[in-house]
Structure formats: structure tokens, C-alpha cells
Length: 323
Image 1 (cartoon, one colour):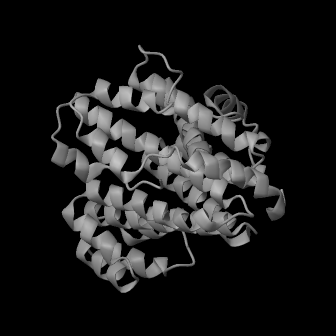
Image 2 (image 1 turned 90 degrees about the vertical axis):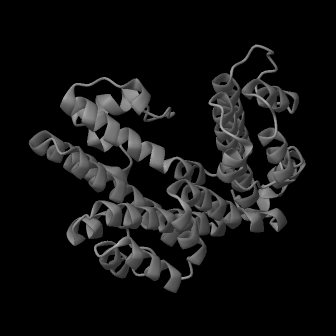
Image 3 (image 1 turned 180 degrees about the vertical axis):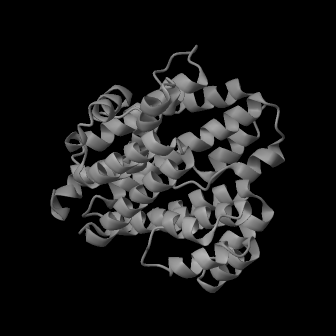
């Protein structure tokens, strides 16, 4: 679709934005007494199929399905839709290679995917039919299978495929003509690189392994980040503060849970500009991502309620809303 063709679709989204949860809604949910009370609140707002007996997973799954259907109905370009699920696609590739090489059947290790779900991905890897995969995945799929067959090194496989995934996302950021997709993809790579650096510092990975895991991006020099990660977490903090990520450091010093929240909120901040956009895919994709953020937050709240966490603990974990 051309940018001008999105005007009608964006108008539909503007109407639906009124139904998005606000930060005030989230605090109301945090203050509720039980998982069932939160679930009833969401059901009253149109989540799920309206069934009074639906459980949390059913309501959240129905909401995810409804938003995916909306995304496709509004005619968003396939390139953009595919880019939203690229991490799930590479995850399924990893899971398929591990299952083929270890013989361990783990259905829960796979994401649902229209073209590359568990059965399809397993068949491709078993038959070595790599040509059935997207072009950018074929080489790493073959290499990853060879590595796993010869070494049984699952960690090495993770590094190979995760790096290929980040390179794929960065390639989208560098080549797409869609401004929103460009910014969103770049942000995803930057956040992934920060996470890798912190975990590498904590586990004292060697420099070469860190360099292999980090994906080049156009925001900062990953070679310097790798060198910092090979030194200490404090060195990573110093690097992040110099490159404009002081708030990430503050979250990391609090806890990794706080940092995960910072990551989601940082991505949400990249969506806010789409509220004034009327002629591109941006508002549609931003709405979809906002709904995914709502679903994640609703799951956090209900799971916490079911396990008896206090309101203060839950409040520390809930994400910033788009609504």
C-alpha cells in the first residue's frame, strides 16, 4: 500500500484507540483483589468472546487473535507484518534444529506461525529443504544444523541464530522505506544488544563470543560495547551513560525486572509519534503493538494476583500504556 492508501485504515484505528487501556486503567487493575476480578474487568471492556467462564489464557489468546485479524484486514503490507514476527520465526528455527538433533519433542517451545509453525519447520529441517525458508534464513539454518549435529552445543546454536535474527531486523531498519518500521526495527536491535552485553558481563563471556553475539546497529559502536561487556557490568554502565542510555542504567541498577520494564516502555515511547500520523502504516502497527503491550501487562497483573504478590510489587512491573 502507498502511504495515501492508509488514510481510511488509520481512521478505523483512531476509533479503536479509544478502547485502549490507559495507565489509570492499569492502576485500577493492580488495585483489584483477585485474578478473576481483573479478568471480569477486561471481559466487560470487550476482551475475549464474552464467556463468563473463560480463563485467563483463553481471554488473552482470543484478544491476540482478534488483533492479528485486524492487522491483516486493514491491508498492512506483508513486509511490515512479517517484520513484527521475525523473532518468533527465528525462535522456531532454533527449536526445530534442537528437536531434530536431540529427539526431544517439546511443542511448547514453538510459537504459532502461519507458514513456519512447529510441523512446517520440523519438516523443513528434517528434509534439509532450506530453500523453503525465507532467503535471509537459509544460510544460518544450514549452518546451525551442521553445528548442532557435530557439536551438540545448544548455546553456540543460540548465538548463531539470535545474531542472524538481529542482523535481519537491522537489515530491515536499513533498507525499508517505511519510516515507522525503520525506527522500530532499529530500536529492537539496540535493546537486544544492551541485553546481550549485560548478560555477557554477568556470565563473563570472552570478548570473541560477545562480538559474535552483538549485531551492528546505527546507534552506537557495538565493538566498544563488546569491549565493555568483556570487562565488567560497571563498564557496560559507563558505555550506556555515554551513549544516552542513563535511564537504562538506572533500571539495571534497580533489578533486571526493572530493566525489562524499561525496555518495553522504551519501545512504547517510539510508538507515541504515530498518534499524529495519518498517511502510513505507523498508526496501525503502533496500535497492534500497543495491544500486545496490554496483553503482556494483563498477564503480569493476573499472574501476580494468582500468586499473592502485593500491589507495590505488581506496580513495579506493569508497563506504560499507549492509550
